[in-house]
Amino acid sequence: MADARKLKILFLCTGNSCRSQMAEGWAKHLKSSCIEAFSAGVIPVGVSTKAIEVMAEAGVDISRHRSKHVDELLGNEFDYVITVCDYAKELCPIFGGDVKMFHRSFEDPSFTTGTTEQVLAEFRRCRDEIKAFVQTLPESLGENQ
Image (cartoon, rainbow, N blue to C red; front, side, top):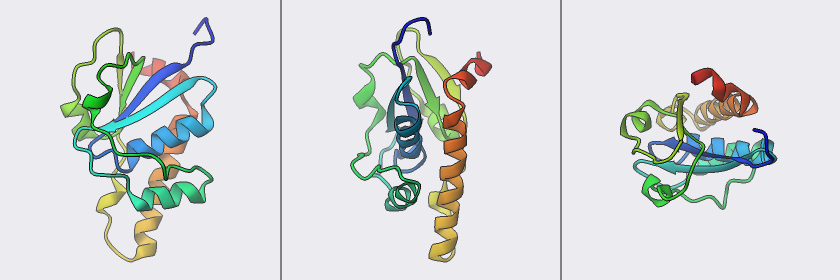
C-alpha cells in the first residue's frame, strides 16, 4: 500500500446478522486508519440483538448497523471480499475488477442452545475470535495469495 488509500473490505456471511456485522464493527473500531469496512449477507435476516449486546460490552456500537443483501454492494469496487462462513463462500457472487477473495470461517453462535448465559458466552467467544482475526488485518491477507 504505497499510498494512504484505505483498503475497501467486504465481510460476507449468510445472514449478515452476527459474524460479518462483528467483523465490520471491529474493523471500523480497530482499523479505520487503513480499512474501509462493509458487511453483507447472501440471505440477510436482520442484525442479532445478542451480537449488538456483546459488541457493546467490548465498547463497539453496532446498534445502527442494518442487515444488507450482498447485491446492494455489487457496484462497489472492493479490494477484498472476506467470507466469514462456509455457506457464504459457496454462494458468493462474482465481483468485478481486481477484488481478492479471502475465506476465514467462524462458527455461528446463533445456533447455540442452553441458558441465556451459555448462549451469550458463545457470542462472546465468536466476538473475541473475530477481533483477533481483524487485528491481523490487512497484513494477514497476503498469506492467502
